[in-house]
Amino acid sequence: MLPIRKTNKRQLILEEAAKLFKQKGFGGTSMRDLAGEVGIEAASMYNHIKSKDEILELICFRVSSTYISQLAEIEATDASYVEKIKALIRLHIRLMIEDGAAVSVGNHDWKYLREPALTEFKQARKQYEKGFAALIEKGIAAGEFQPVNVSVALFTILSAVRWVELWYRPGRELSAEELEANIITMLLTGLEKK
Amino acid sequence: MLPIRKTNKRQLILEEAAKLFKQKGFGGTSMRDLAGEVGIEAASMYNHIKSKDEILELICFRVSSTYISQLAEIEATDASYVEKIKALIRLHIRLMIEDGAAVSVGNHDWKYLREPALTEFKQARKQYEKGFAALIEKGIAAGEFQPVNVSVALFTILSAVRWVELWYRPGRELSAEELEANIITMLLTGLEKK
Image 1 (cartoon, rainbow over the protein chains, first blue to last red):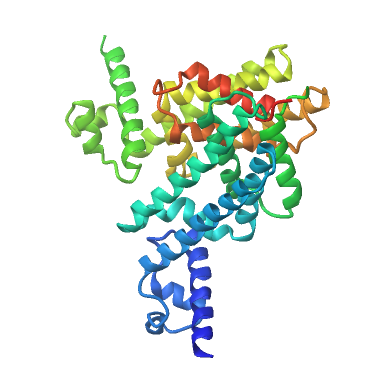
Image 2: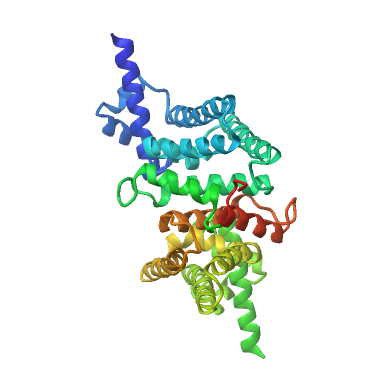
């Protein structure tokens, strides 16, 4: 049973690390802080994980590979482009709500990755943005979307879902489902009543 | 003529400071760096300005008071709510393009303000957001806007115009006018073709 317990401990370390990085920043978090949160001795942390750099890599690439694999799944469906973009918007909001600390690390602390991880992470992000942009472009070509500039459309969507982290607190006045529905209305239908 | 020359020098100091703060961060910029950019002796900086804290205050409050006074002007017109929101979106994009370094300091480095300036700045921002939200609310009540959640609408708009700083480079593939028109289409009309 040891390997499984070890895996679980490793998972727990990553979860607590994401929370601490979000709260205190990557630079402001020590392995000792992290051991305290996980509830083990600082020295035995190294039985589970090589270094703080390794933790950061694991968190960032878990987030980026979730986005990329979900994008691939959405691309492979035969839903309309409108439905595909809606699914991507929902994906961003759900990941933010369910795994907010890791998403925040992927948004902010990735810049502390060391090479070659830094370059790989930037490439993964670029790959994701290109795939997202391609769906917008195809949706325009198919006559489903307004003929907008693709970069403006992409970054307006990404900024809207990304900023949710900074202002939204689940359940306060707006459920996750209402948040999704309202953001989709803003981005797909627009504020103006037709 | 001396007072005028002094004012210009002060203005030049603020402009160079905003650029340096944006580039190296508030903490990473020294009065010596700044004197170098302005082209005067570090010691004579203090003839024009009291401290780095004073510079930060002057930049942040110049930005916030521009937003607040422009909002008041827009509120006072008898344009439709659609036109008022469009005017606010254009205001954000223009300030970002024409005075990008100061806007960036107002977005990021305000957290290094000292009290009581910090509290005053947060109040000014809150006041601006409330005024912006009130226009959305009135536009919904007037039947001009979709009945969206006002916070979602407000933060979707603010995040879209704020992120322009991070990805837009003037003139590369998109003029400032095209950028404005495309963001307004995304936020008011929506991506989906009706």
